[in-house]
Length: 163
Image (cartoon, rainbow, N blue to C red):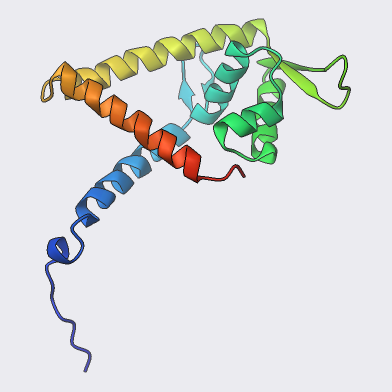
């Protein structure tokens, strides 16, 4: 007969609750963002597509390799998303003048319009979300939260390897 000794999980693993909370939040956030959204033009796009389009909008002429590097994604994964964006008429590709193998990515008029809708959508939803949180925390506490998030991101990025 197997006897399982009961133990106080909080005493044995004092950081379990914290790591579990982070895991639960990240899982819910990723699941929510994985679902395509209508950002206001009647069409549905994933958050990944939108953030790659946004990167192209703010960095016209950027390459798949540059996006992959800054987003910590494989070139293959970024290429798949870029192909979807091109098929949907949101971006165009052009070979670079001095580097024929390198392809520059450019937002189309439709891509620019959608990016603006996405930025508005994100701003409205972020404002609404943090408005709810602000009922419980001061603006100084929220500022500290974002500073901590930035530090966490820097640590994770410096420790991680680019795929």
